[in-house]
Length: 153
Image (cartoon, rainbow, N blue to C red):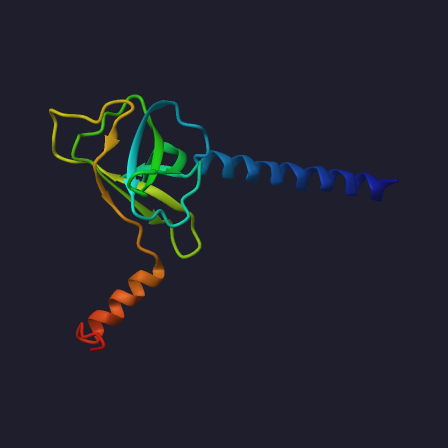
């Protein structure tokens, strides 16, 4: 009887510790939905960016990717994102898609511009973008530069 009571208490302690780790992981992952206004940005390629991905400025989550679609006239990938309502993006803000590491997910990085008179309106578009560069693209550029930038002729 004493052995099963001890096992039950130890099982409860293990469950409490696991729940504590889960709670901490959820709080630090910043996975809550962002409420705010919607803006768009167009890219030539998005590199597997998913709905629900973060939108970050200086490493801080300020929004969420809502959807990605193809513009039928330009064939660009258009990303719709929700930005916190307490932030106004300068009109010359630059949006880029970056990877969170070798195995990390993709996210949208916003670099605020210097324009303090004009801002991106709700429902507007961020005009300045940098396209996603995959690991293969970056390795190719390094090889190209290392070989003196000469191609086959």
